[in-house]
Image (cartoon, rainbow over all chains, first blue to last red; front, top):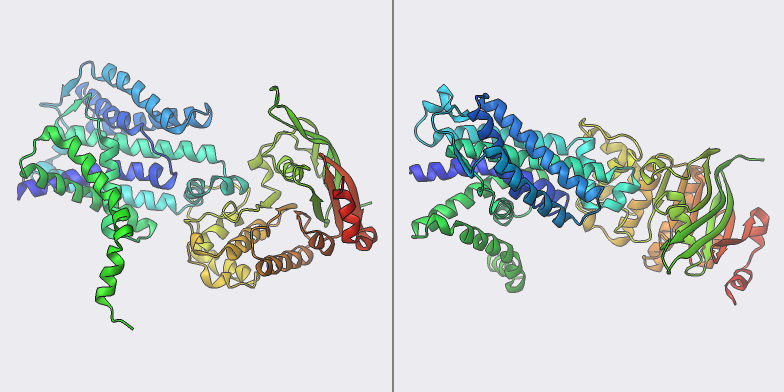
Length: 299
Length: 254
């Protein structure tokens, strides 16, 4: 039972990563590799700041800022430097690795005995693992609502249009480069926030904790899409969090089957690959159509 | 004499500048576009019709010459800046609309063409009725599909939407780049009719590229023939009305 609660808590916290990548991957139609560097960057900044005595919430906010900065770097490399997007992301990701080592000083820094956002009086009074569930729910709700608000502003609509049809967006006077930069900053800010929260929840920051984050984020997004089908944009944002929780539960089952934590990246990739192949399989085998046929009367 | 809303002075454009493939496309275009002009533009492939539009819209850099809007030099202003007074409809229905947004959302985006987009609620609900009334003017059922994603529209509806979006916020200059070429003959004629009605009724200033010489003669008050990057003929008023398809064919020979 406690393992399931723990998985739900993890799913909620990691959902921020999915929401962040959704903004670039699904809305801007850009595959942003920066997040593999931004996630540990958020963790490193938060842990380093907390270790030096900064208040956990402030340290978390600082991590968001660091993430946004990394996003801006990728954005400028792409929009101003005209570097192909995938490469721009990889460049920043690689550079940030060194920055992370500088910030942490060594490859793994523990928060043992330090205050974190999970140490508040209320959260520690909860049963084990419920702290991440409660904090996760609060943060996910706030971020989801903020994102929905953002996407429904004039600015947000221009942002969506930029990803949907950049030629049209420009012809309507939308500054598409600015939109891409803003999107990358918001997205990577969220990823930095996610890294900061995960590090505080785990009690440490590790230089290698970013490996596989793109796959994990995509898994949340795509599991949500495969599981819930046609949704409105607002509903899709909620589906990411549910997808993230489902993904954690799948991992739990897989670990129960006897795989070790070292196999997680292999398993993550397989889970994502299966989810991405499913629509193709469905198309070729007409699964849904034959299923519907079986349910409705023939005329 | 009426005042020129847009004036092109000896405009030149170059592709592949500085390489051995350097090629001059527009070679000294001089043109005064007056308020209320509805100009049809004809010419062979490669004559520079689309390049002319791109130079006016700002997607093609002007190598030499000057572009004036109401007397102000806008030769070096950005594409985004020019959308404040200029709008265009592309030949490809896919280029003018956002497929994963609804018809209403697309219209709302277009209503704010060229203006600053702020972090304030878009108020789609409040704008819905007036947008729907505008959509009804296209006479093709667009008003019944306000909440449909544009990817679900037919090519004709999609292009009618593109046209409506380009005129929703009144442009000083409207550029129509063969905007009915991708449609079947019937739908194409319908959209041309609607185009003509709207331009005439609202006294819009428009340039329309077409390969159909009949349409070039039938619509507008002025006709330009482009050849090798230059305006080789410019007919207005009665001169244009007296033109026949055979007259125009002479420009396409040799």
